Image 1 (cartoon, helix red, strand yellow):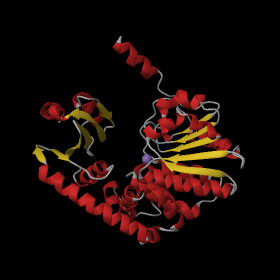
Image 2 (image 1 turned 90 degrees about the vertical axis):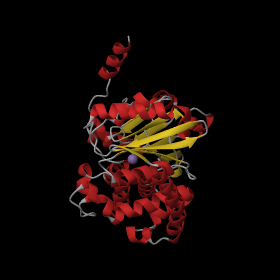
Image 3 (image 1 turned 180 degrees about the vertical axis):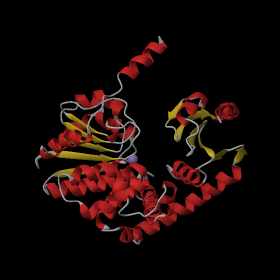
Image 4 (image 1 turned 120 degrees about the vertical axis):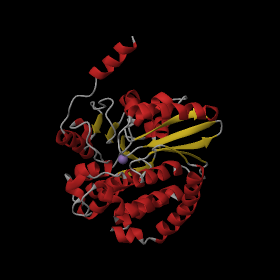
Amino acid sequence: MKALKSKNRLSKSPKKRNLNDLFEKGKGFIESINPSENVLLIHHTDVDGYCSGAIFLAGLKRIDKNIKIEITAAANEEIENLVKSEDVKSYNKIIILDVDVSYLKKEFENFEGQTLIIDHHSLRVDLNADKIVYINPRFENEEIYQPTSYIVYKFLSSIVDLKDLEWLAVLGTIGDYAFEDCKDLLEKWVHVEKKKDVIKTDFWKVSKMVYGTIIIEARNVIEILIESENLSKLKSNPKVISAYSKFEKAYNGVEKEFWNKAEKIDNIIISVITPTLKRMGSALLNDISFENEDKFIILLERRGENFKVHSRYQSGKIHLGKLMEKCCTLGGGGHRHAAGGSIRTSDFEKFKNCIISNVSNLT
Ligand SMILES: [Mn+2]
């Protein structure tokens, strides 16, 4: 029964679609917006999400300055709450950037208005329908890695001139650590040969500053991005500098805690932290993993009775999603290079043994 089920799911994997055709469908969505309508623009809470939100907001205003747009940052949980509530009825159009909402297909189909979703996460279902446009570069190539800022920039540039905002597309793209599949855009702005050298660029540094600013004072980040004009103005913005220094202070404390408690077993590094700020754990773990590409890093965050588990292994030698699915006692999963889950604090030893025995089988 189980095997049959998964087979069915595989046979339903979305059929290929051409990105230009999806852009055409998206153009239709944009052209149908009129100033009497209420538009809600939702973007993800990371740097790629904010940069795509900023480009989109500025782009829509250029297309028609009378369009009424409300903009907000959100992740899955908030979007789910919104589409399941009565509040959703006050909008005619919803635009979602950089969040995988494919599990909310039914809710978006029931929404009376129209929805435009631009995302770059792995495809699960094809959300495209009469009232839904779903643009994702993975319809052309399942393995392609082109962040939402890159796609939003390409898409809106086919409608309106956004040349002066190209640097924001680069910032979001680099914030998501993309390189190979975005070279046509990046090569004008960053001069590095290899992906790993991206972390030496100013764009990388500023993307860290923006991330810190989002965490410390998320409210004005879109305005700051749009008004900055260029990377060096953003870098020297007093609000960004002050927010980032607060973020760094907290970050440094957590980093110290990570290494103090770190346990090293072969090429595995595992540690437990108690973060003081939201999303600090994954930010720290990303940085540690980029600096230790040959190490498999696991970070646990204490959450009451449970640990939230985050893991990264940039080498890609092990599929972390599958490993986390197997070892996280309260559920886990994710991608090859990045995955997570939850365990009870009392299951820590069991979890660790599961990781060790599976990793030694795989390497
Ligand atoms: Mn992204």
